[in-house]
Length: 173
Image 1 (cartoon, rainbow, N blue to C red):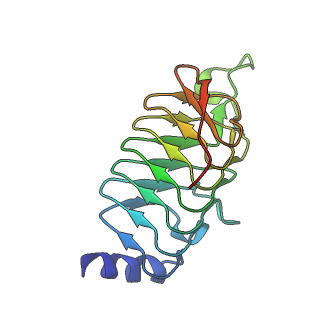
Image 2 (cartoon, rainbow, N blue to C red):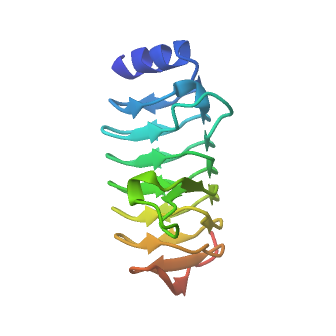
Image 3 (tube, rainbow, N blue to C red):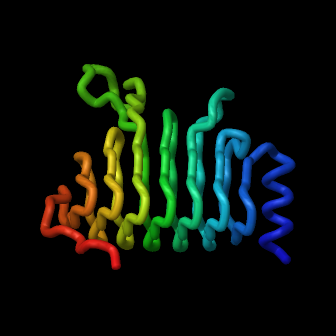
């Protein structure tokens, strides 16, 4: 019942939420900039964080994804997620970096945002970090604690800091 009330509340704030979703206690900024497909499960402590500025949808989530506790999607441009993905606890995905290459102080440097795209049927392990500009292909696996700084091919298994390819996922049954 609590999930249904949360969904109703978020819809009244402009968030597009598909059918048969479960939403536990989460934090959402600018719900009108978030699109959530059908049959998604979002567990306790997740943060969906598009920027304060008004404009286009910047977090797009497909169908049948599972977000374990404390996942954070921190978007300024676009975070796009396909279908049937699993996100472990504490995963952090961001499409933005601070412009540290300039001579300005860090807090004064402009943000540099490049879209992040996560395919379908991926598994992102606990406390993994996916950084700006990364594309993760369908069926990829990201090991727990990995820091993904470069795009990952479909079916690849990556782990480490920074993440490197350690294998290939088998064909689906």
